[in-house]
Length: 77
Image (tube, rainbow, N blue to C red; front, side, top):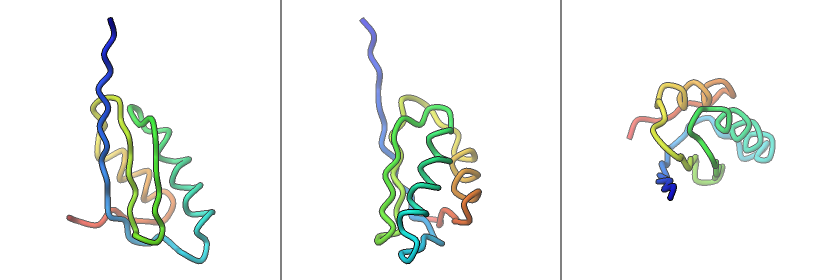
């Protein structure tokens, strides 16, 4: 039997544009889904939140780098 544990992590993100909502959402999803361990991405441009579903440990620095690659920043909690 194989057991996979999933984890959902949410980040507050600055720099999301509601004017270019679809472009921002697509760009962030494209970058984050390439991070090893990320299996799903949800972007809420109105709330300024990005949630990622992982199937194991994910390096936060890779998540930050992916978000920064599209011109946004993960805000400190």
